[in-house]
Image (cartoon, rainbow, N blue to C red):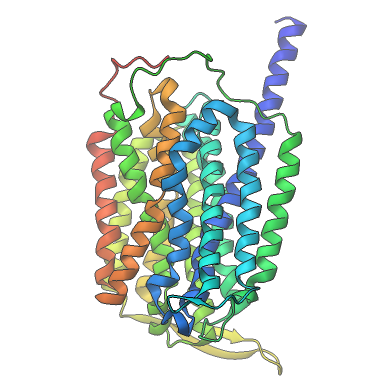
Amino acid sequence: MSTLETSAVAEKKSSNLIAIVTMFALYAMCGFMTYLAAPAGKIWGGNSVIANSTTLGMMGNMMNFLAYLIMGYPMGMVLQKFGYKTTALLATGSGALGILVQLLSGQVDPGTIGGIPAAWYIYLFGAFISGTSNCLLNGVINPMLNSIVGGGNRGNQLNLAGGACNSMFQGAAMVVVPAVVGEVTKDTKFSEVTGVLLAAAAIFIAATVIIAFLPIKNPVQRAKNIVYERSALAFRHCLLGVIGIFLYMGVEAGIPAATSSTQVKDLMGGGDSAAVIAGVLGGAVFVFMLCGRMLGAAFGAKVSARTMLLWASGISLALLAVGVALIACDVTVPYEVAGKGGAAATTVKVPVGAFCFVLMGLCTSVMWSVIFNLSTEGVGKYTEQASGLFMTMVVGGGVIPLVQSYLMDKASFTVSFVVPAFCLAYLFVYALAFSKNVNPEIKID
C-alpha cells in the first residue's frame, strides 16, 4: 500500500472515530431530554388545579413524542438535503430552545386557560420543541452509526454501544427530578427544577458550538440526481418494522413511567420516601437497559438481530406477566431519610412485581437498534427515508403510555398492562415471521 493510500485510510479512520464519539454524546443527550419529560410533567400533574391527574401529568411526555409524528418525515428530507452535520446543529440548537421555553413556564403566572394554568401550555410547547430536537438527533445518530461499519451485525453492535450511553442518561433523568423535588404535591412548583433545566440548556448550547467545528461527513455520499422509484414502505419488512418501532417505544417509555407512577407510590404508602424510591425504580429500568446494551454491544457481531429480538420480546412478555401477578406482594426495604438532625432510618414496602418491570430493561435495551437494523437491512438509497419514518413512529412513546395511564385512572393499575403486553407480542411475531426482506426486486442503488 502506498504512502498516499495509507494516509487516506488513516484519515478515514480518524474521521469515523470523531463521528462515532460525537454520535455517542448525542445519544446521551437525547436519552436525558426524552425521559426528563415524564418526571417533570408529573409536577404539573400533581397540581391541584389540574385535578391530580396521571393522564394530564403524562401530557408533557406525549408532546415530546408528538413532535416525532409531525417532524419525523420532514427530518428525513432535511437529512437527505442538508446532510448530517447541519441536521445535528439544528437538533442541538432546538434542544436548548425547548429547555428554555420549559424553564419559562416555571417563572411566569399568566393566569388560566380553560381552568388550567396557562403556564402548563407553555411547558407543553417547550416539551414539543424538545421532542423536535430528539427527533432530529435520533435521525442523525442511527443511520450514521449503522452506515459507518456497513450495516449488518456490526451496525447493530455499534448502535447498541451508543444506546448504552443513551440508557445511562435516561436513568439519570428518571432519578434526578424525584431526588430534587421529593414527593409531588399540590403545592410543588415547576420552578423547583430550574437548576436541572439550566444545566441541560447549557450542555445543548455547548454541544452546538462544538459540533459547528467538528468535521462530520455524511457516511454515504449519494448522487445528487438520485431517483426514488418507490418508497421505503414498499419493503414489507420495513413497513412492519416501522409499526414495530411505534409499539416498542410505548414499552420503553411506558414501563419506567408505570414503575414510578402514583399508583406504585401509593402501594408503598406514599410520602417523600415512596416518591424517591419509585423514581429510583423507574431509573433502574434504564440502568438495566444500560447493562443490556453493553452486553448486546459485546455480542452483537455474533448474534443476529432477529435472534436478539425473539429472545428479548419473549422474555419481556414473561417478566411482564410475573410482575403483574406479584404486584400486590411486597418486600420491606430499609431507607434513610435526611433531616435537620441527621439521617433517620425507616423502611418502605416495595411491590415485588416492580422488580420484574425493572428487569424488563435488560430485554427492551436491545430492541430499538435491532428493529432499526432489521427494518432497514437491504433498503439502500431508501435508508434516510426509512429513518424519517422511524422517527415519525417514535410518537408511540407518547401515545401508548398515555393510553396506559388512562387505563390506570379509569380501570386499574394491573389492567393497564394489557397495553405493553400487546406491543411485545407483536414484536415477537415480527421477529419470528416478518423481519425478512421479501422485496429484493426493488432497485436500491
